[in-house]
Image (cartoon, rainbow, N blue to C red; front, side, top):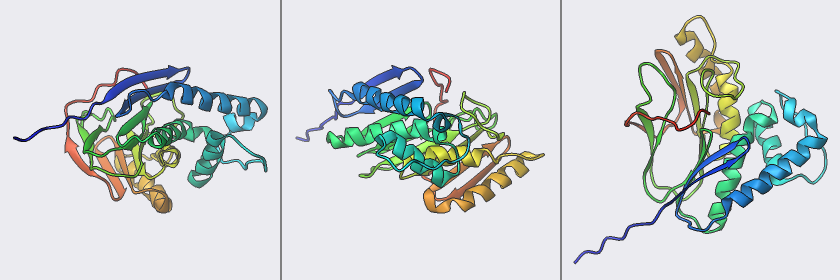
Length: 248
């Protein structure tokens, strides 16, 4: 007789000021909320003595001092991505949260922070792509095969959410090993989605993405009736319409 074993999964929503986490994990008592509270405390303390870190829209150099882990991560990613440090904040929180869960022996965890995802999965998962595009209608997603190493899937949009974007994309999604860096790159590439036509917009963004190819695995750019890709993306599949419970 065959015995089928089902893995228990636990779901949690964590809301701490501007941070809105949706978590799916194989860990029951992970105390992630307390960990994120500490991340945010460290970040706010640093911002209180360095307002440039909060306000700059361009990379800035860090001072030669011992920095909190989240601040160091944001400095590093923003310099690689050519954006201000705060463009990497959501992805950095996702990345460090996932690392915390992995350190506690998680084999399957998805940390989604306002559309910026860090995950490790020992079984296939589907990650929906939310772009509000009139043609695609939020009915596509990435099929992420089982993997033993972390992955970042981060999205920026010129039309959805409160994050600053100077471009006109429906969505720009970056997939890479570092969610923190993917977050910054999504912002940087989305800033260059501009032009008279949707084809012009996507072309400009593709050219920008090509300059950063060493830092990601794949990029998907959606603008009106044009789509562009750079690098290698997971398989794109049809999904039920994705509806978010909150606005990014």
